[in-house]
Image (tube, rainbow, N blue to C red; front, side, top):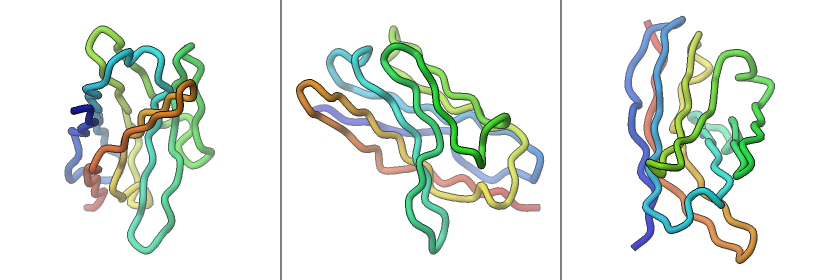
Length: 117
């Protein structure tokens, strides 16, 4: 059964770093656009970054310059390197795999990132 699993969350002090990983047990991983979303307490889900199958990337303005998304198609894995973390980055981070033709997508259960001193 296809699934997506995130890891790497935890508690970090302001200014610190974390690296999230997302392993996708799906066929033809290379063809999927991979996205990281987050949902902060009391907030709507927010798109943080994505990396397309052709390796183009996008970052929200709130993380641009601090976060880096990458993928390793040989390991069916996408990463989110998060540097300069701030309390406003505290959220549950979700990995999303999206294919457009045919339309298919998979969500992970999320991983908690807490930034606090």
